[in-house]
Each structure stands twice: as structure tokens, then as C-alpha cells.
Length: 250
Image 1 (cartoon, rainbow, N blue to C red):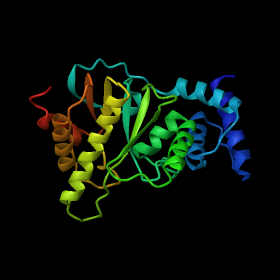
Image 2 (cartoon, rainbow, N blue to C red):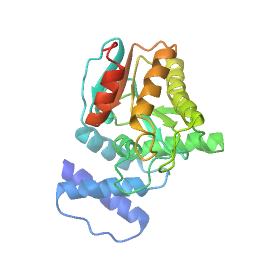
Image 3 (cartoon, rainbow, N blue to C red):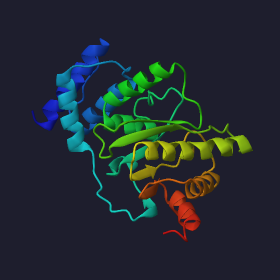
Image 4 (cartoon, rainbow, N blue to C red):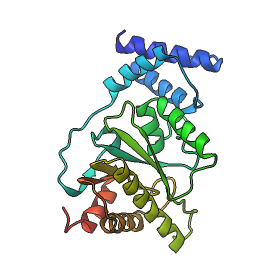
């Protein structure tokens, strides 16, 4: 199968699965967006080996890989965290730990689950079923990264700040715990590199400057055996904030 045929196969499979007629667009880009939307809304359940084989081939052909060489210690990098070939990337998850179900939502949780493949949601469900309750803020879980260039994804739930509310000491402590929990998991699994996203600063509304200060202070003050720790930022503003905080470390 070529890429277009793989895409058509997956779309037809997922549309048939939901038993609802959907008009499939003709152009490749629109088809990819429809595939992402269908993956986003699909509940965590098993699927055929044929689908997974084709999905994996397709995603691996589409996912970008950045072979960045990171120095020992703390690094700052701007770009898409899903492109990094490191031992683990950190996902800013929600308490269900099942990923974002909003079609085409631009949060990191949605993007990571989309590019990893539908297996990721199923593994998260198995973890949550075993746990028997929602994930608490400040804790973390580790999964395989599937079709991402990283080996693992570490999912952590950060504190959400209500609109126009001030950050409390509890909020700050919980955010710090997110970074500690991720570092502890990385050590437990003998990982050598980890890339952190800006936890809680997106839809969870934690102020960027305060979140960055907590992130840097926590990482610097938490003993670990990692070779490289990467603060991955996406916006220019976040880059400037972290660059100033890390001016003695870069």
C-alpha cells in the first residue's frame, strides 16, 4: 500500500467502527485531519493487528524525528516535543490519563496520543483500570511511546488554575511534585534523557513565568541519575523565560 491507500484503509475502518456515515475528503491533508479526529474520539479498546500494522507504518512515515545532540546536564530546546529522539518525553495529561477526546484539539496531550497511535490510549486505560481511580495531581505514570521517536512517554497531571485566580502555595507544590514524580520514574527505569514540556501552562492556565521558575528549581534540587534533562518550549515567550532562568547552566 502507498500512503494514500493506507490512509483510506484506516479511515474506512474507523468510520465503519462507529457505524455513522462520514464524507471522506479527497485531498491528503484533509484525510489526515479526519484520521486524527477519528483517533481522538475513539474509546480505548482493542483493534485488529492489520489496522495496527498499517497505522504504525503510516505514522512512522509521517512523524518527524529530530536527532538533536544534547549535552550532559540541563538543556533548553524550542520545538515540537514529539519529534525528539530521547528516552522519555513528558505529557501534560488530564486526570483520566486517557488523552484528549476533543477532535483536533491543539493541546500536547492530543498531539502526543495522535502521533503515538491508538495503542497509547489502550495502555493508559489498562493502567487506570488497575489503579481503580483517577490520577492524582502531582503524580506520574510511564508508558511505551509506540510510534513516537522517544522510547517512553511519562504522563503527569498538573494543577489547573481557575481563570483570574491566583496561584496558591498548594498549586506550586503540586506542580513541583509533577517534575519530581517524572524524575523518580525516569530513575526507576534507568533512563538517561528526558524532555519536559511546560506542564500546566496551556489549558491548565498556570502562569508561564511562575511555572518555569518552579520547574527549574525543582529539577536542579532533585537528585537524579539522568545524563540529559531538556526543557522543551514551544513559544518564543517561554524560550526567553527559560533562557533567563538557565543563563548559568546553558
